[in-house]
Length: 233
Image (cartoon, rainbow, N blue to C red; front, top):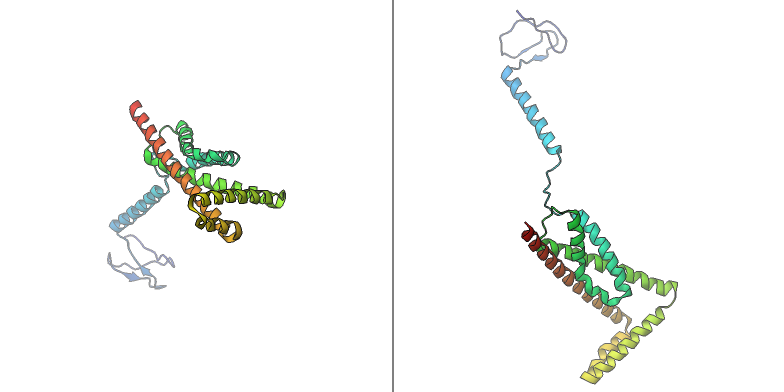
């Protein structure tokens, strides 16, 4: 006969039928007997929970041919910064923004040879380059104007140049379309709010042009590189 003790007060329990629920005669604590089948089920559930936690904590398996966007953005930032700085010194240089994705793809492909280069990937890289180039040009231009106005106090020369360009454009418009077209240029020359809106619209047009050129250039560069990869394989 196996003696059993209460789990709470350690008193010796009376002999009871197997599988029945009874209570300690001393403290009244319920005495529950766990069958071997239930014990095995509980251990199995614990093992399954532990295995699922280990699986969840394991690092995900990455596709080596997928694009590493962190590296792409870093390279695009460097290339876009260089193009933005040069385009301020040489204004027509921003038209070459469609070459930026080609440079980014060339540098990235030399470091990550397993990545699949496609036209879609090139287009997305081109869009990123266009956005970064536009932001870089906006920051550099704003900084340059602040320095001219508050540092060098030479903003009057810049405004005089803008006015002379507008007057020349007004004269050409009058020669071609008559006096009716002069009202637009008068608003630019006399109303500061209209001039600011015109400048913002001009900047928006430049940004849109850069995005289109850069995206198209990236798609073309990605397509060419994908064809080269297929021919080599």
